Image (tube, rainbow over all chains, first blue to last red; front, side, top):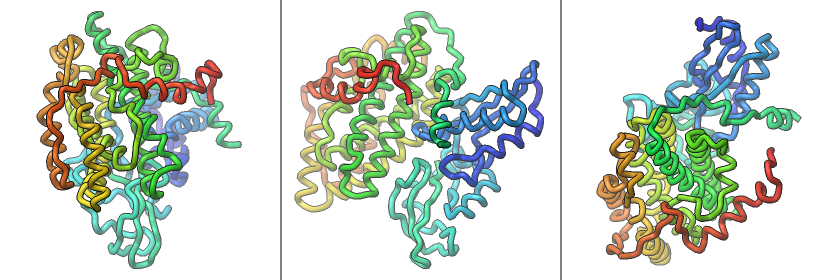
Length: 169
Length: 277
């Protein structure tokens, strides 16, 4: 096994999350490891986000398709459960893309970090999650669960807009 | 069009999950298989029950919360049953285990199969269960079995979120109006005796505890009580007295409700064997 070429990473960076399409699986930190077998077949190990995330299999299929189109038809894509995915794995670029999509990125460390506030009280702890539209910190939680497993719904009291919040986990 | 394409190319999830089977002696392997069914069936059946709320929740926010509860639980069940099937080595995958067993072959704790009742009852059940699972998953994170530890590492975070959300409702309902208090108290009185089963062990539990794979169920009894007590106190609810009643879902002896739940859950696979999306 040798370390994967950057070319494969470049392909993975084009695979979107089906539910937040402006983020790639690389932005989300879902790519655990990329290795290449001696016969040249890349092995991509992905970390699933939430246990029940219905997009998981679509992501694997999209990854295989992207790799096949890029000249890696024999690529093996599989999920590994350890290390457990955490919102801490979202890259700086991923966080910026979340904000650009109107989704507030996790405002503190997830379960994998030393910051235990998120798991103690994911929403009540954060009275001041900034609004991704106007930047105001005068926001309030509306719903702890939102359109997908990974998000909560909040509202900005300043600009009046509701917005989604990527939960720290 | 795009969605159809994605779904048709969905491969078998068992094959796409890296799974290196540990080398156990046959007794330990069999005990772990049964343990995984007990855990996997419990989250599966509660996930099925919880999903019955879809379209019926009192407000939209709780509609989404309950759907997400169900989704998390069924996701956990998939991982556990996939592992159980691989460990058993008889070619049964998650779907075969979930949809093609008979009632006495399920090992879920009885509380998970009880009807939802009203919203208070659903939330009391979820709070008691999630509080137990938070403790259990936390312990299983350091299991000697690496795959079970990995599943626990994911599930513990979800269980914490469930516990907190359901716990918030326990306080609001218990310390709410006279009516909401009475309904929540009645639910707690009804459901509490079903928790005794969670902390009883047998030779499988002893074997797995010995091997460092899973804590003995009895070890969690006191921590669980300590976990739920402050929330119940804040909700102005009293802990029901000890009852001689025992349920035995973990041993495959179920309540009369299980026989009604299964036909609905299994309908598609029974009517169209091998049917796939």
